[in-house]
Length: 472
Ligand code: ARG
Image (tube, rainbow, N blue to C red; front, side, top):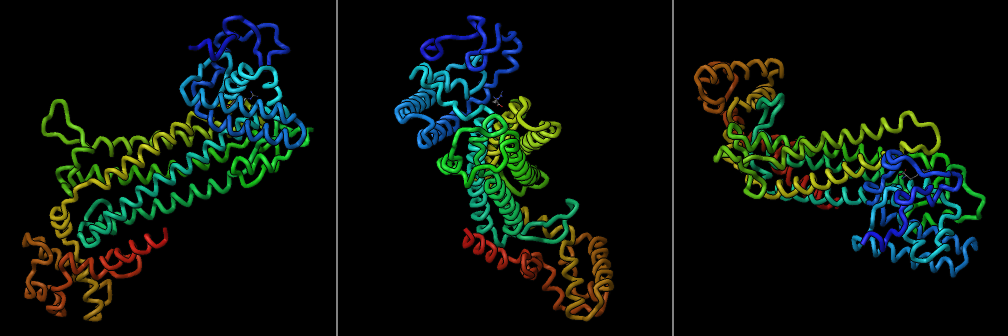
């Protein structure tokens, strides 16, 4: 199996490298070979490598740099190599270093020495920058799809729970009642920003490095705009030194990924808290729970915990990329080969995290009775009493705040919720309170009254959902 793909292996013969070994008498040391090889990682670029090579060969032919017969042979050969790799027939050989040399080597086995013409007016430096950009662009599109799916799950659940009352927290202390729909839509807003960050990164990165060659450009009469267009880029890059050493697009991608992961982690943390017994706001369905091998009672939120955990790794991937770049003089240096593991890692983790979160949100069983009871505890409508005094009795807010605070103290001393106080008890606190105030002390009337733009009132939540849907 191996030998029908890779016939000659430098490691077996001790020869110098067939791609660049002209000036070398001997082959690399074993550890040199090992530290140099990236095929185990960058084989994921094979589709992009073949697409970019086909675009390059077609352009060389169009420009009269390559004969049309040679270009046709190269194109057919590259398609065959692609089919072989798709069928799992790539044989990794560390002596061939990376995916670029594997593809070219196999091409030469298939079509002979004419394969050597493919690398005219090109270097692995512009080649890898092009392939990697294409890959990252695909990862951005995948992230955008994952964000859309999670957004849809949030909108569906928010609609269902537009009027479900839950405690709204500050300092993780009950602050004021909110609606579950409003709470879920807060995460939707984060996703809207995430989507715009990915879209922004995509727009900025979409320039083709191909034709920048090793670092200085080339003397061949290339048409860089035609390869750019063939690969879906908006234009060719403007500076060859920058083009081969720029990895800002990877940083932009990782930044967008890291912040998305942070948002997912916050949502995961809510699910973990809400599913815990003291909260009991949600029941994790079987499909999203794991058991314990020792405690038969357990139903653990492992998926949410892993989403929270994965965010740490994605943040680490961003930091790794930034630190990788910070000391590099122009132009290409082999350090840049280490740009791929953090991006691949982050992309894998992010798509799993987005999918897991969309699934959990869709399937969670909310427990509205527990949420309502928790919302009513802690005298969470004290602000509503103060607001009533301002509105109906013309009391300055600072004074109204004080009056409501004394009412809370009375309720607390009596061991009852604020909305359990009688009118007499309230009037003993302040005679300006009339029975109109009683109506604003329930959690339902509290949330219904929060009608300011962007507020938690069920009507506002429904409007926000309608706006979200019509913006799609
Ligand atoms: N495997 C290399 C990378 O990923 C490809 C570019 C190598 N260029 C070179 N001049 N050695 O960065």
